[in-house]
Length: 598
Image 1: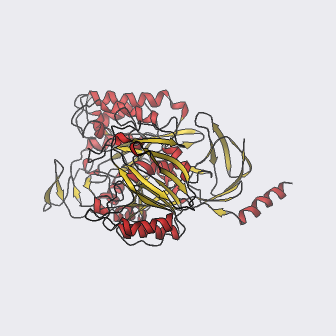
Image 2: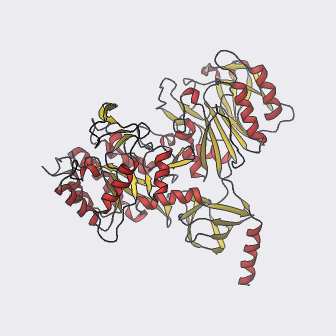
Image 3: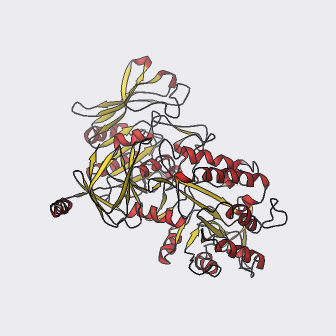
């Protein structure tokens, strides 16, 4: 009987279809957007990652390369102005006709700010998408209301007449079959129109019916989801397969800690006349023996520059602790990776430059051998037998270039940082949580998942107790949806002031109080799991799934309560009643199992 079952699984796997998790998202460079600064990356990609999707980015103003590897394409237009609206719409049509499910959020681009092209665009919309833009439009938010919705409304903010909004009349063709999600009404005209719907070719939604941003703030700092973004995603994207999950290991929420080297040799007021790195050793590392990644700026250790015997001795005793993982925070702390602006240089002829209010040096291009390889080599000389440093925590703006990311790969290193997620009383929305990575011209920068104390303290200028608020993000990003691991991320200079030290203790006490419910891992383990998220392949035949290339991945997730039968490579599966999901622990590069819904 066992042989028959194994043969049955093998036979099914021969005919399994691959699950395509790839999305291409578009930004508009003519409006100042790029691969990082756009609403999809800033507010929606984290939800897409939660459902297992991998997002690449492209400029809508450039020629499209092949799109055959993508299942979905997303366009988010906050207004109806485009550099070339007719060509923009034709590009959307091209994607649709190549079989890519097309998701349009916001306005349909019909103008170049000087002229309306609606006469040319409407026939395209009608023939290709089954609707056209009607004659009735209004931006009088007092005259607009949501008439019906299949999605939960007023999720983080109530849709209200005091907010900016618009009514856009969409006129379906006679043979169109749309699955309505939201409808809106122009009250004075007694006219109702689709505001969000799903179609055979993809989906469309007004921006203002699902998402709010403060139009008076050019930085879009006020963000809220009007609909439940998880419901919105599930209504449009396939979420029925075993989803790669980096938030969980052995059924528990993942937690990891990492420290950037800034401030290691600064004097502390917590222990008078001692350097912050030593205060960390005495007051934190010896008290809270959690797995932690610790980095140094090597020029603050190297005696040829700013280092000392004392600083080296402190670094060595920190790295001697069995639960400390070593990393480099570069040699001189580059501040701007794309412009080659560094905080310190060995080049006496380097030109002075400013990085914000910080006096720095302009090198033109970062010396990668020096900043990355040499710094890692220096750290390795400080480590006890059995330990190795192979990791870099990005410094400064934390925006490495494509060349920087390629260098890391070429030298078999790992690296992360950036992202800066919040979800607290000041920024109370899922829209402030960042995704797993930043797409950089075909490469990926893996983000860390927490924000550090520099941001909570207005770049270390005030409110030095502010980092205590990080616990709110720990809680909100883990429940009711476990969207992110816990990441306690800070600099050595948190040990400089009593207020910041006490704020740090709030975070550590939270971790300690909840340690039985957490799975602590090293930063390199988190990086590996994210790489596994991108690498893993999933195929399906009915209820049987085959998971391959899963060496770096620990966990898969399915909605609801399920049983796993006829399994190979599955360690365990645990149902989380609060989230109504099942976590599947895997322990093999190749995994097969059948899912039975309970």
